[in-house]
Amino acid sequence: MEHDRLTLTALVAGMLSRWREAVRVTVGVVVLALLLSVVLPPLYQSQATFVTADAGIQLPKGLADLATSPGISGLATQFGLGGGSDPSTSPAFYAQLLGSRELLTRLVTSRFPNPRTDAPGDSADLVAIYRIKQKDRLRGIELAIKRVKREMKIGVDARTNFVAIILNMRWAQLSAAVANRSVELVSTFNREQRLSRARSRRLFLESRVTDAQGELRSAEAGLRDFYEQNRLWQSSPGLLVEERRVRRQVEMASDLYVSLRGEFESARIDEVNTTPVITVVDRAVPPRKPLWPRRTAIVLTAGILGVGLGILWAAARELAGNWARHRPDDTAVLREALGRLRREVAGALRRRRTSDAPAA
Image (cartoon, rainbow, N blue to C red; front, side):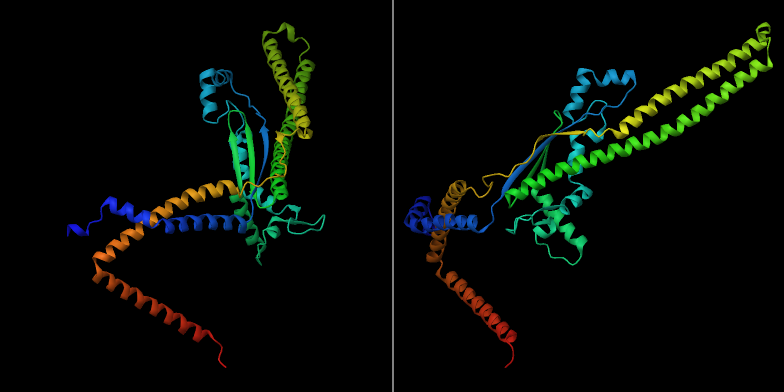
């Protein structure tokens, strides 16, 4: 059956003879892509960026020298680790924070200018803007969070502590507003976190200052009692040792009280310090041009894809025609099976329409 084989020359010739079909496939793909670019809503991209502060913690001298050495600090920077820094100030922490359920819940329940209405000053939360119809409010918030996660991208640069929030949304004004609101929520979280830490530290130091003050007064009272009961303590070796011990207790209690008092005053200052931990570099602005659709790129891409599909279509048609010419019996059996399948499907559809029709 050597004559049944299709040579490459015959295949190419058959494909060239079907050039009209290939062109129709290419044009169809381009037209379909253009229709999709018109029917599907546009997509606007907004970006807000900020830099995180490096709040360092105190390390022992040996560890601090090791952390600041060029080799170790460079290695730590490559892995996104700050040498001796608080993990809650790292860019990776803010990336996790922006994806947390607590912050996203605050975001989707915040009110934004409603792009679906023309009334000035009309606002709604993202659940309403997304038109999520759920009787259960919590379920609606959950669906809105999932959609925001799809539309939000977080970029992080551990070497510069640079964080970028990118929003791809249907409306330009809304994408910028959501990006800026995300930065505001991060800043609010920072203030709440720092205030809570400072308050806890201040309350702890306040109790320790009270205890240290009591210990100091007790030690001073003991020293006074010693002097009152031992007027000639300078002439007794045993009393000299005892006097030094009691006086040393007073000095230690005094040093502890002074140190804790200084820490307490520092904690009181930190509690009222509202300096932000992040610095906003760029606020998001509404984009003037949509990210999608880019019709020029769509036409070029669809044209290339259409040409490939057209060539494949012509090749498949030529191969099928060659197979049908050399195997007429198999072709007849296949056509009969396809016709029977078509009739059965059509009959099932007619019966379903008849059963669904209301009785007269």
